[in-house]
Amino acid sequence: MERTPWPKLYGVTQTTEAAAARRDPRPTRSPRLHRAWFVAAVTFVTIIGAAAFRSLPGLLIDPLHAEFGWSRGTIGAAVSVNLALYGLTAPFAAALMDRFGIRRVVAVALTVIALGSGLTVWMTAAWQLMLCWGLLVGLGSGSMALAFAATVTNRWFTARRGLVTGILTAASASGQLIFLPLLSWMVETYDWRPAAVTVALAALAVVPFVWLLLRDHPADVGLKPYGATEFVPKPPPVTGAARRAVGVLRSAVRTGPFWLLAGTFAICGASTNGLIQTHFVPAAHDHGLPVTAAASLLAVIGVFDVVGTIASGWFTDRFEPRRLLAVYYALRGLSLLFLPMLLGPSVHPPMIFFIVFYGLDWVATVPPTLALCREQYGEDSAIVFGWVLASHQVGAALVAFLGGVARDVFGSYDMVWYASGALCAAAALMALVIRRRTVPAVPALAV
Image (cartoon, rainbow, N blue to C red; front, side):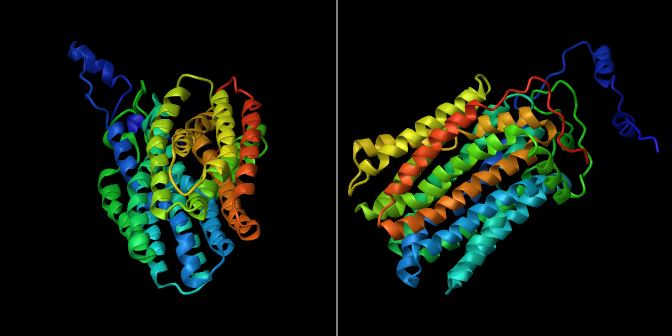
């Protein structure tokens, strides 16, 4: 069956703009602010609202240990399930967005996050923590992972992709900045349950914004992607989302750059979400620092994370992403080696310097990693990045669990800091050996 070209199907010819120009010689006035920036703003707010769940795990370890007597390893295991599912769901979520649209997938994901967080207030056993916080919140948050930002960026932007990636990645840090002080105050003043309910309400509050304001594709509103020279028709829904995600993975694992990107990003997750975000507050509390003060330091990381990630997006548009990754990981590893000497009962200037530096470097790795995925895997880059993100969360999950076990066995986190610093040094070397692609990438899988 001969397929009708898209322009004829909708009664539009390829010479429409030229004909309009002949009828009216005056230049067509473009809107001052492209709709893509509005969509990016809605996406930013959505990720902020969903970021509440990322602020809570580190605040739950001591309260749950005190109330239920669960070991830190058990609580860390629940957090590790959450982090692992966060990553493993991401590539399927990217494929589901191609099938059902961004709005539907994100709205359902936020609802699942709210359900899982809200149900924790009635739990009495560790398996319920695994189910609610590990399974439900993990699945929901995985659909709100960075693959969401990658999909929005790929569809709505041709120019400034690095900058937009940095801005959307920074949204999670902004959410951390907003929610961490509030949640830590709730846990310290009242209980951990009001904090869990706040996370649920924050996720639910964003759903109307997603449904009413977010659009799946520029063609939905008759626009070209930002920076594009030609109109891009909306592709038809892609069926077989799970099959496509697995097929893209099957093709990508045959290439060396995938394993290097996945390995470096696994270390990134281990040294951020798994280590600092999960264990910094209890580690600082071990040294006599109040929980609210430790949580405030994490919030400060969120402030500089915004600056660092946006700056990294700007750098990625201008410099070689492999070298950027090498610098980021090397400096992160060096800073972790000094952390055991900085922890104490009070906040002092060297600790503030560490917090500022680590914040600038927190997810600065995302824009260059996504740029390398786009360079290597073309149209399938969002799904490939979803699998790379899965490795990020697997690394985070392992350290979230092993960090708790190390604390139970050794009585401190010192060995965890040193081991993570060494891993970051290895990641810097891995980033440098990723080969450049000199020809345009083709889709990894034709569906």
